Length: 205
Image (tube, rainbow, N blue to C red):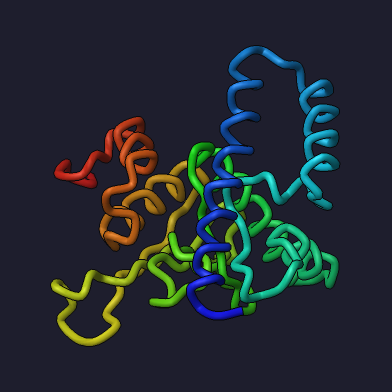
């Protein structure tokens, strides 16, 4: 498959995922019960040839890493026990946060050991814009973002911080995505920023 065909396919996949999430969001807004929603989702998966409900979620694993979902990847880490168990649990919780924050968006994730890079580009052509990882403290995470090229004091300069709770992680994450400018011009993202009082141009603190 040549590059142009691959790009077209990825674009159509992105739009296709957005349509699926929009349908599910509207069903939730209409008051469809959880059990009924799950049943409808399973039928939808069957009709659309989807073999995993996780493929309906806003956060998706980059196709360059194969068919294993992010959830499956971190469940595998969790199953190893010891420190890995906490890391797996923390990252699975983080995926829930991402899915909750961005019901109208598709985020692409690229895994590297216990780290999760985020990008609006499924192929990660320009690497990651935001990098997330579990801290040792339950509910705490390391949040990093790559500074925009016109603001970097040196090549690949980034900003790093550590949240202390899930709610703080949401705020750090949104600020990191905003400041990286990786999602600039994305109306769905700007709506999420406004919802949390972090609209572009407003102070972060």
